[in-house]
Image (cartoon, rainbow, N blue to C red; front, side):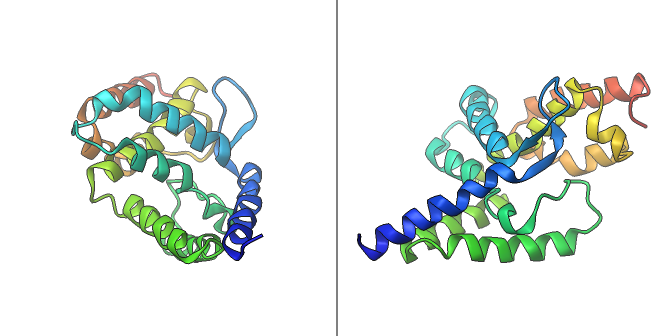
Length: 194
């Protein structure tokens, strides 16, 4: 076995741990929390299904799928933080450390490629990153909506906070953002969220 293949297999073995990282949102219509592997799979399918709603039409779909598949691998070491966390500095520090640790397992060229893709996703400057972030934010919103407020209610998240943290959806898809605003306003009117 070559050293390159050995590193790649080690990475593949290590990322299996993502199946044990549970998020703060539940599966649609279920009490069980979703794990990061399920989340990554789901938003990849969402990317394919919802790509027509992107603000931009000439996106590199393979790059988007790569971003969505690897963006949460860092949580193997950092853990999952709810998007509404007040611990932003701690979260950012732990996630950067997690990225360094997980991607450094790979051969140098792949390590650089994965780190670069992860950074691009985090910085949200490219059309691909903006659309990938739409999906990463949309899925837990849909889960909360279809689970009667789930983590929004549990963590007492206000409509104002939901809008503040998720407004970035508009950067990648104005149409999806309008849909999200409608769901938030409906739950606000029903008194499910404040």
